[in-house]
Amino acid sequence: MKYSKLIKLNDSLSEIIHSNFELLTVFQRFGIKLGFGDKNISEICEFYNINHNFFIEIINIFHDKEYFPDKKLQSFSIKLIVDFLKNSHVFYNDEKIPFIESLIDELYWNTDDHDRNLSILKKFFYEYKTEVKAHTLHEEETVYPYAVYIEENCKYKDKLDDCYKKMKVYSITDYAKDHDDIEEKLTDLKNIIIKYLPPPQNQKTAIKILFQLFLLEKDLNNHARIEEKILVPKIMEMEMFLKSKIKL
Image 1: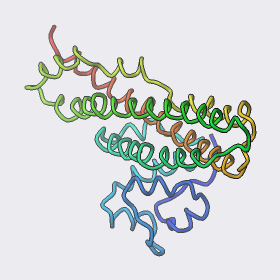
Image 2 (image 1 turned 90 degrees about the horizontal axis):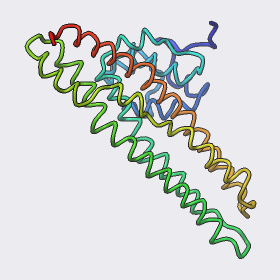
Image 3 (image 1 turned 135 degrees about the vertical axis):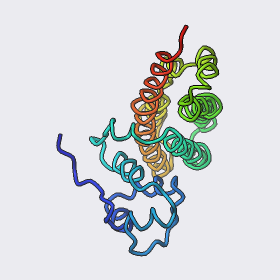
């Protein structure tokens, strides 16, 4: 498969931003701050003590939708993957979603239906926001700690019984089976604005909202791919290995 120009370790971060501004929020999740001069990725990773191999793969996933090296990504530690996923949750819940909500509050209709129209949109968005919060909270309280536990503790023979007991209570297959596609629910939200509500007076604000929703959807798609194609298969493989080592 041919990919568009992939980002390399010797590429300048400032040049990367000029070519794809959407990566700014991904840099942020690694704790990288603006004002990095002409530093390339290798230099910036050393400065922030970031695993440069992991960083370059994540950046390229968000840079090129056709690029997703499953096996290479599965070689990284669960903790490294989970830390990035948790930082993404912070971005969604504390920054992106509140910003979209603030834009929705600015919408207005010069009709008697203003309150009704705004109420419909705000109610739907509130339900979506609540669902995202519950989804990410479940992952952070149950799924991610379990994944890290399996990787960090179950490689020791003296802990196999403890691991098996934990696996009987919870397994990554439970998560894979019930994993909600929260990014897909954005379609209905977008269509409320595009198709079903009458045009608001401030069209520019409506377009800003849609633009942010499309960006969020794109980001969530990448987030879900990492969970479903990297985290879940990696833990499943560990669970199978552990079960093969335990005498039932």
